Length: 511
Image 1 (cartoon, rainbow, N blue to C red):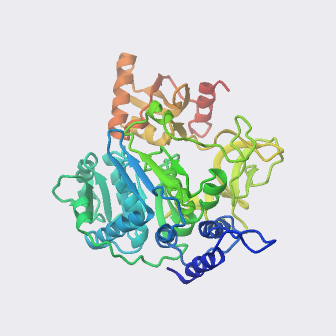
Image 2 (cartoon, rainbow, N blue to C red; image 1 turned 90 degrees about the vertical axis):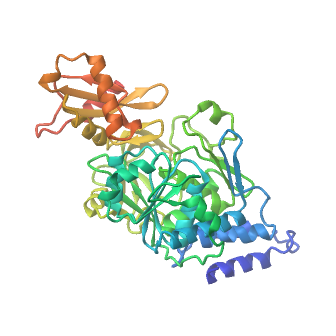
Image 3 (spheres, rainbow, N blue to C red; image 1 turned 180 degrees about the horizontal axis):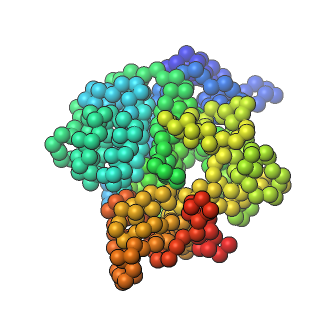
């Protein structure tokens, strides 16, 4: 345990002997609350970020010691079910043991060193959380990806990130093998399976044989923890780097103040493991001592979800129907114009986060290897999120739409350029524009406006629609295919020839 954290734990233990306090004095906080209060103060920017920080060592291992000392209720730290009777429950102590074994697999069999990058493309199975923590223990940088990535998607991400290792499941391994020769940085492949596959290491077999003894690497707060690829709104997806402290401590306050998590709570997030919200759950629940609940759910099932434990209202806060709510600490969020000037209440503008004179420590570092994109996302003292909204006089935000055309369909964020690029590969498509279209079930769906090449003008529209949909499913991730297709003679464009998606989107939404 690091000296600063050891002092904190010892001080908390000494000051909490008995819960009555001296006459006329308030009772001291229990040990866990004292420690979480310190993490929360850092998360809120009220205390400086320590020079060195590692989530596995400085948070998870501390909870393991508190759990052993009886300072946490006996509910699990991790609870997984698959709906057919299988179940996994780990205490913080067991999570620590299993993640140390996994860390030995990464460092030993895979040869991963601090700073090496590893792709995690796994469904909602316990190994995703286990390997995520193992990456922290070894200092490896994790790169999560959704399980619907195609061969083309995987190749791009492996080449761009120069990932040294990948861990995935039986269904995705053939896609990796198909592009393996074109990814020279990829040295080791881990398979989560009960069977073997040529050229792959079996993670479960290695885990069973691994030692539970492992010394966590010492990482600095600003060292990289994770890389996420954006949805590819303009051009190819870009890499966004997050640090050890920005994720490891950045979500403590939101977990405690927004979701009101405590050591007795169970937190369920239904998102795909490839999206950032899977990590947000991890980094908001575990610092607060809460249990993460996971249902494997290969596909979203509303009936199953509605039949399980759920709560998403901030404790004690007045709810305004239709509002996004208020800014989450420690962020200073404002509505600004295109030059970065703060707008008065009621005016629509860009949702922006203040990054100057001090950048929030829990904010992402940069768009990796893309300084132009990083610079383009900033105006004046603010980072421009790409969302449009207005703020009322009480500080509540009201969402109006997106600047960057990203489509949010059933919680999947889809960049229109990716779909347009896939359509462009079909001989029937002269040009296309992709926008969001309202849908009563998914909120939004992908709609493609397509200008056909002369040879396909006489084809049956319904048959051609199905053909284009299947083509997009094959070329890119299946969830990105256009559920609606309209054949048009031309697309709205600016005088410089740029397609005006905004006009098509406004047409779809009746604006």
